[in-house]
Image (tube, rainbow, N blue to C red; front, side):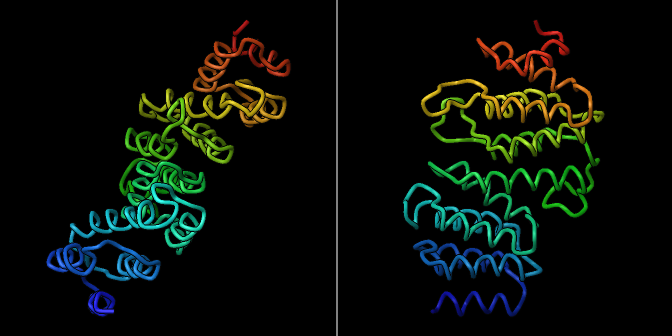
Length: 268
């Protein structure tokens, strides 16, 4: 109860000072965040305190990442209940609204041995928001819109990172579609040079992920999905051509429906 009262004082004052952060870290939460109600309180403080010392962000991310990954079951992983609790708080105002929330989601993805794909998609959506409308996004205020930066690429890499996976990435269908949408929206922009490789690796990794009982390959529904994404605007973009070349080199027997688009891309 004591830690709640002390934290509530900060909420009433609307300010978290450097001294407050030290006390939160070393006294009030010295044994870590142990209950959902304590996690709820820290989210309230981050949202409602208008003035926060710069050290608050590190404490917030450290304390909550440890709670979600190690102080709840299953330890070391982000379970479904914890995932929904995290997402519900981060999306309380409809989107990833601040850098501390974004940093927390990334930390959980990086450190957890297993993490539901919903959390990765949430981070990718924050990148989309920053690219499309940086003035209202969690990060990137003042950037040039509709151009992908090295920072964007770094965040996306972290979002699709999968501990223990063979290729080091795990991309869901929803994530792959958002990555394709980013490519379409920024094709004519001066994107960072690292974007092409990430685009190819992410979408290629999604399509070539091993399937239970069938191994690596692109099945009929996946082939139709890929064709739909590439034909969305009636042309094959440069990075899409690179993706097709990557897939062409990986597939011993490509699905027959892909043959025409491989031919258009100059791949025989």
